[in-house]
Length: 314
Length: 314
Image (tube, rainbow over all chains, first blue to last red; front, side, top):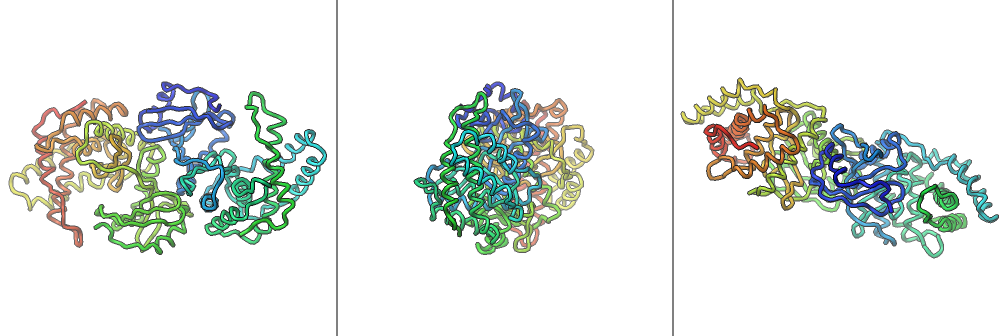
């Protein structure tokens, strides 16, 4: 259940009087999502999504809202924040920071096809290019410092083999410097459930609240690790990964330094989600849903990347 | 024919490499429109309209493009200009200033219903409110100075009765000062063919290239003069005009000073289009389409407003 804060039609109508979106026609809670309260909202002017932020603060939000507005301005299909009469994206509703964004068409897919992976690769590259002219910076909140902290916290819960794996990977990446790779704004969480498609075409990227400034290749690795997998062994599916990478490369040509870093980037991306899932499983935050996703999935992906000297490339 | 400048798929593909809109899938000239070259463009990211400006210059265009972006940012359904890699809306294609904007759904209607007039009234009020936070100014290029010039130019072509009518109206409005009325950005050309609807709902306002800063009530008068007419006599249709005005009033309450000015505003709005149509008929610009719209239509509207002491109000 993702409606943590209930909003009535009367409350929303009053709130919308500060916007130019027309009369409220329909309000419907959205069940998915675990961080914020979301509603589908239909008004005289169209279809929108209302979000009440349960954790992010009014200080943190402008980066994400401005980023979405910037990408939408460049034609990237992402939620476009609507400004109120004071020309602000961010308002307050029921005492929470809140915004209303355009609603996108399309649905997530569970098992992406070759064409869908290619569409995803192309749009990711377009997003990376469009992000180059976005001027705000946001250090990756799941970077080196977080990794070290999270590893230390979850290590006691691991058996010897997994603890050793974790130690080795943390050590490997502690000295890794990817700052020579092309940098920019990355989504950092483009899993299949954050992407909407119509047939073979990606028509929506959503949930930008992990977006940050980092190596673009890291975003590629995170996305490929989820989209282009052989689910039986946790290895990359050659056809899917090649379709993804080639479509990406056709829009933003990948550089030699990126090929060199590719295997370690895949490992880093797998480590980051193994860690956060371990964290969520062993240290659930109070009052949170107790349905954490399985960390093992990412340990297998990580293990598979370690065992592969030449991962799929172009 | 509205494709004054031909753009090939190869030329557009090259031009689009500066944008993040995805691969060009379809390109189709648009026959309507008399000032610019327009194409429907479908890319991997969606449906767009490409415009090459045949008369407006790169100096004049930022006002209009920034205005559309501002209104779209507020949820007003209008074409949303796409920025290129340099974060600019305006580019150059075939030596002409050019832009690409989002394509809206819907179709114009010839004979608006009561519900459609109400929808139009509401959206116009929302547009006026959203425009209040737009900071750029554009004096009305069809204001007092233009009126005097145009009247002097077309007067020799009129018979005695119409010349007298023209003289009287010019004289009346020369001394009229509407600066005490609520001011803001107005579209100034929201005729039925510049509005797209789906069923009873306005879902698109297009063609902002006459937009300027003026009395908001002037925009209401221009729109009502086209949308809420008894076509048999050129008078306002009470039901349509009331539906329009009441829906507008529900969003932006009309003020007493606006009621006082209403009849003169309707006359001014009719005069402006009578004049420009006389001008286009008697002084066609070189190489322009020679299918000018009938000025008589607006003279009848004007005459009717003069004969009405209490025009339809709320």
